[in-house]
Length: 368
Ligand SMILES: Nc1ncnc2c1ncn2[C@@H]1O[C@H](COP(=O)(O)OP(=O)(O)O)[C@@H](O)[C@H]1O
Ligand SMILES: [Mg+2]
Image (cartoon, rainbow, N blue to C red; front, side):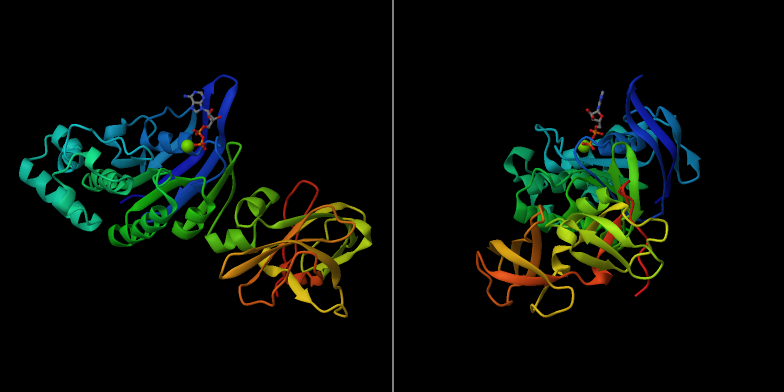
């Protein structure tokens, strides 16, 4: 077990291709950290630098107290699990799992007992003598994880390990990985582009975009207090609704803004560094839009454009006359039935309205 520290890490593949710009992060011993971000933002590159599979162009990597930049991959005490499993087809599962130990000259009895123990944890004991081709995708990925476990690493790295599995199996394996972390209590760094995986697995999520960390925090903190528009739009499904507006009142109390067509919305945000008429973006999550009666203060008239019944929830896509963006609202499955064309009234509770300045940075929210 070990902590991992990244100090001003930079990665250039060529002189003018900078993939990681300047990344600093302290990962605690035993923590489950998830790197999330869109495809191409540098997540795998970051992980491969930690593993020692890629040179670090600038900055320092510490594993525990040790500066690890120049330590060979095989000496870092790290085990990595890849999306592609990367099992040897001619070896049985047991041989695949024990192979790294065999190369390191570990005695056979020791290898056998570690393979056995890992197989028990992963519930694949009955598969140990099979070759990979006789396994399902999920079983192969378990063997690949087993191969990492037997090495008893200080840190596990996972690069999109569930992306090749179908949806039901992904969910299953996600739960298994959480349990594995509870059992082993080893530091885990997990890369995914899937925000649901990030939200469900992480102690802390690190959101990457364009080679920089956008925000680090617990899943709920990032969900509730995104520090900028990128994080706000990335986490949450369906996405946060975002609407353009201009500031009307910018005190350090309740702020108010005007949407297109002069509709007025209040927000419990501190807008004291903005000025009247400054352009802003307001954000509200689908589950926070309220269905209200026409005489409610601040009610906005809207029309239902599309309804999706998901069983437990209903998604209603609605249009406000004069406002360009279609809004999504999430209602309980038991809510009164809405239908295409219905005319409704909605309200945005000020405590759930987020504001972002013209650079996309979130305004601080006022305590409730
Ligand atoms: N060996 C390489 N040489 C040059 N560019 C690369 C190499 N590997 C990755 N890149 C580029 O670095 C960027 C980040 O890639 P990667 O770390 O794989 O992103 P992610 O895992 O977040 O999808 C991409 O633009 C990719 O094209
Ligand atoms: Mg990748």
